[in-house]
Length: 357
Image (cartoon, rainbow, N blue to C red):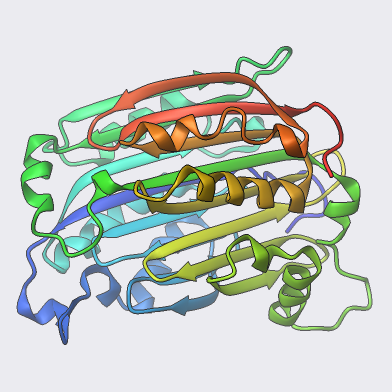
């Protein structure tokens, strides 16, 4: 990680595939799909993005990789890549589709999201503008993903140019007819929540720095940061794969059965940033969502925070607006938009009403 000028805001790409469930793609009774991709294929995909794998962990549901710039999650029929810095995330699409096709998988949904970059002029093409990104996506995706929508959602904060960018492409009704073949949690019963935080409390941010004479491994230093910040308490059931960068910075992937969570921190003064993302079931109670957001807020104590939820269930986003006032964050704006197949994206923006404790 760079000492200064590092872009913390991630680009996020999620691709979902149809599986033909060929017998060779099973291990016992477990369909493997994309998880059969050899590490060499994943490394080829990531070279196109300009990042590398630094740590990995898996369970019976999915494989998790901490990257030199953020995270990668590989399910049998879904892949999620988040990258920060000056990576070229959309360059992953072509090699991914080629390798997935070799496994008998067909793309049925693409979702791309990101916030507003802190250093937009440093971004390489096609991330030079959202128009360029949408054009790249349109050209990279197969024609059968005919239901497509791009949207820019404003934060509504005074004196702020912060925006949430969303692009979704879907095979539409054809995709719905294929979902019944899948053995994972149906997509219409899941949600994703992406939290972006800036202006972190300086005391909290300092916990993600390493001392100049710290000779610990990046894994052991990462575990120390996890323990010092009580990140494990956000989801005590999760198995954590953590990693500390030098001289500062932190990444974590959490595995809890078929659910993932991930944290990335750029703690430098002047452009401090942290993100937290997790997925869950729409059958989860709103109390669980509020509890998770509260714990995240207490770890980082941000001055500004946005929460983007993607779900087909209204209780997921309705739980959020007034949830964080007890920990010092007031909801200043709220917007929502509907997208093919994935449901509604709701975007909340918060600022500190007092330094939260």
